Image (cartoon, rainbow, N blue to C red; front, side, top):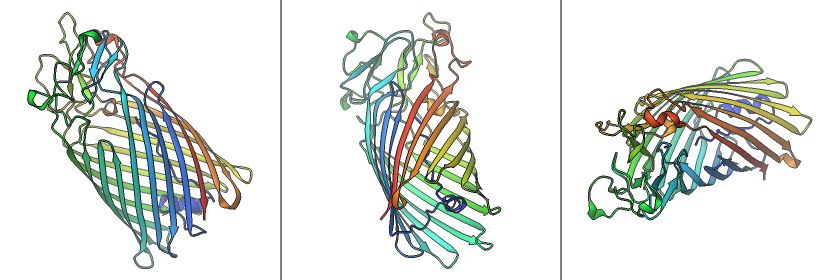
Length: 444
């Protein structure tokens, strides 16, 4: 699931757009500005996400600004577990080991017990370092039932050439703790699942996996919690091209180490080509990913003011040592309609190649690879987002915003390496989602 990113709103033409590009909020006219928002993301018959967020900007002095935010989001519904569609019934044991769910023939295996709640908070402060230089220090925390993250960040920005150019350098790091329900499965450990009718399946399964007694031994026995560390660095430059246009260029790097596997994703072990039931699922194993990932990205964004209206276009290119290459194009146009109302249409296109170790299934009898994942988020796909936002300026600087978007993701439903019964199945089901967001900002 990929949620479309939110963006800073333009309020008064190019001046506000410039500040947004620099990554800093404009100095509030009053001591504190606040923005509250609620977002609802819905994939039909799949995941539903609800997020509430409150952001505050407080002017401590002319050059010192404090920002803090609080976020609560909840995920419910059914999430793909990574196994393939098949022409036979499939039954899987959930992470707790005490409940199972059945998937009908021809349906995408979805774990309908999926749910989680996340609490997050962040704090940052802008501090002057001389007349033309500003530093920003930040702290963020996030916790959910099976995950905890703590991070710090620092950024230094300096204005040059009569403040027409700004260069910025930023670094951040986080330490995360992954605590899967039932423990951490072994890489490629066998999963408690069958391809028979439900009455032939016990609640704990016959192949091991989550919920298994520690004394049983064998593959898939839970091993407890795992850690992950992420370090990021960014270099950016923002240039005022003329009275109406500004341009921003960023280069960023990110290195993650530790447990990068999704402990809940499975991969189908299919009957080998040439057998009677070629392509049918015989077993299921937990996925396995590398324990390091190095990403790089280039980002360019330009904002142009047409008097009251503003056009915002951007492009991002990302590549990593997992073999994923992605491109993102996005365009927004803020159209002022009357004195207090604005409309902002948005169009976004995203495309990526597959990770080197992405496989829709393993083949029975073949040696296990070093790494493999059937998570479609690591596969090759295209995604489109179309959205429209309505903004209304109210009394005393208050503003109400309503945004509605539609998301479509699609990949190769019949890849060239599909075989046997897999050829008749949709191996990359299309995903659609509706995103609705309401925001309200005010000063006090």
